[in-house]
Image (cartoon, rainbow, N blue to C red; front, side, top):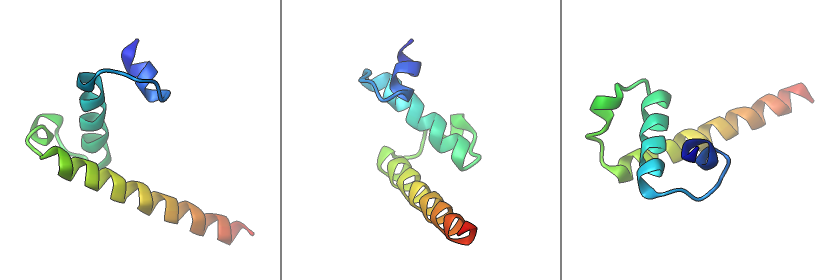
Amino acid sequence: MNIRKALRGGRVDADVALRLMLYSYAKTFSINPHDARHTPMSTMLEMIQIHGEVEKLKSEELEKLKQ
């Protein structure tokens, strides 16, 4: 299955990659996927990257507290 392959870091066609990005964006920010389709790709990518960095910082801070 192409989606599973993409989730595991494999190469997939652009359509599958776009669907996964749309899903991730909509899920992360609690946006209706139908509405999210109108968001520019650059904005989706930027917001997902920012969210990833925020989550990394949270994780690092939690690790510091555990030590």
